[in-house]
Length: 585
Image (cartoon, rainbow, N blue to C red; front, side):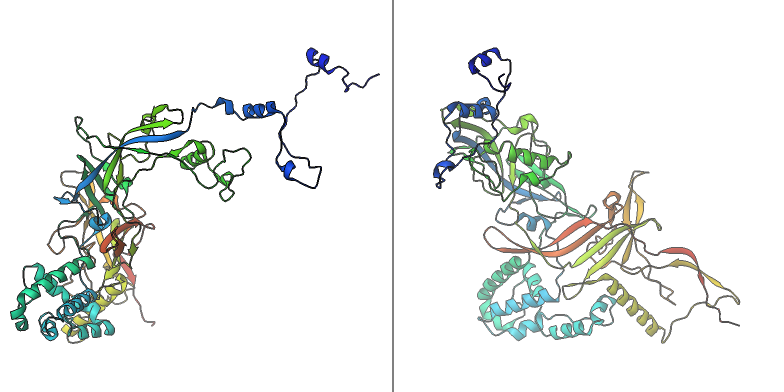
């Protein structure tokens, strides 16, 4: 009896199909029979039908692309940005050579001792080749020494090193005074007798000095983009009849995502752009799947190790692009100038068979990667932004925190500007000013001021109307918005400096320019209530330095706003009973 697994007539069995069999090859490897491996590594296949079956298995017969692109005709329109408007002010000419961050973020800088000495030294160096007038300029534009009896100069008087520096600097030249005199229309030779016969030469040097000072630190001459009641920047740009608006820019790199497009007129006509013919190049990146069957991919990037949840849309799109459609993408090179809004008006691709295909915009399927909110047409905004700016230590830092116990918002001045041009501790400055005022009160009374009113005999507690807070805590109280009975906003207030024996307490004023908004002019400072969330915010000012495209360095004073770290407690209490120390019987 024949074995059941042995077939005598293979052709007859295949015709009957009684015992169907499926043979599948999922691996092909060489079987070397000699010491030489050159023939085995070639993996020779003598069955052409197997190659066709392998192509069918991999789905290569289901492809629908007729050919690869060889040329692309691109029509591009680039509208230059012509003007900038800062916080609703007048239109100013746009300078693409300057970093836009320096133009937008620049805030007025209060010059300190360091800047005054630098400007004075630079002027004396520039004028030295004309005449020996060092002593004359140092006497006319001398640095004012601090007044040790003025509370405004207490931060100088409290530090012997700083006070000594100011005393020494009083014999030096104050370059800021000369710069302000020149910008006001004066001349450098005013009051300098040695330059009477060299007025034209002195005016030429003064012009170069003013230009050098403008390059040293960029200070806005007109209205800036800072919005005090929002603690943010607001500006707009005009390009090609369109207006690009940034309503809430607070810090970081300034790029296209910070702008929104204002509504444009429906009948607006755009000019035809320039057409060019370019060569498409396939997209290549590390770890991309190789199109050749026998080639291995680069293992430096492992896409299989990327984990993504169902909500990680950006990561899922990246994986789909890298693994599924990697070899289907081509890049069309296009060079665009900065400071423009570029729009693709047409793209026609010609493949290897001569067929021409018109590529439409991607937003027809609801996809818009670089589109601005509110824009009626597609466009890529190329701002002259910096690649990265270096920031110094903060000159000012304010933490706006909510105090639920006191039902108030406090502006805590953590860093305050010092007369030397640096930033110092706000808490230490508050203690020094309070100690100075206490010493002045003792001097006014000729000794110790009147003490506390003695309590009643046998009393164990004392009633206090209010318990104060540190002097670097500035209060903000809620007030109604004019014309609205429900909406409120925050208004800057002031705490009284309560000293023992002082019958005329004075309000404590903020020392940072961030909280002194409108104080010098006698106005109120109002802040929108929604700008201070429950976590609070931190606002700081620091000098930033960056290089423009031409290599020129730009320095400006900019503000930054960040999320805070939660609520705070000021310790403010009213109607308080404090224990009295009663001596034992």
